[in-house]
Image (cartoon, rainbow, N blue to C red):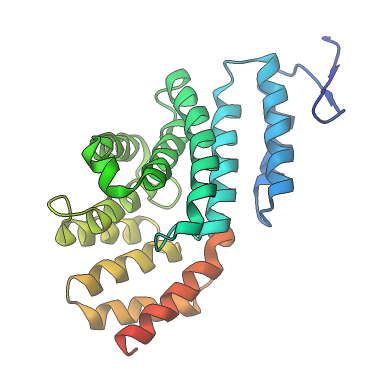
Length: 253
């Protein structure tokens, strides 16, 4: 049996276990809500120690990406509106998440977790540099390609995150990339595949409202305002509810 080594980062023993299942489990508990910077940093430290033993461990890399995305989302509410105060955390966590997710995707190109977190990380990276600039630099094509790749592998991943990503792109991108009809189609598919995900309903409502279907949008917004979150969206639920209520006020619902 291989001897355990002591981590310089945590002071804990980190065994050279095949697959790193114990470390995965410990990190997953820290990454799950409640999301705090301290818990995320502890999870990342555990995973980085595992990578010291096995740099080819794609499971560690996508978990590191997920950890930074969780922190970013907890502090921005998934950037439902672009605000200047979000840019520091988008820049910090978006870059770190993208670096690990790209490596994970390279190491395991057919793993939906690797593709999915690459897509999510790339999306927040694009927001961090500005949507218009990202489109002009060609980021849109890569982002949509990652979403297509994820949907081909597992369109139910993270409650239809691939369709959700495409829907947000077509709603939030500047002209001529903006396409509300396509956005509504994508979010409708996301709701079909992930009906318990309040985030899916919120974005479908926003796309419908922008497309002039306010009555249908109000019904969905009311569901979000009163609904229970999926476990994987617990860290953003408060932001989703607040935004749904804000939009209901604007629409007269």
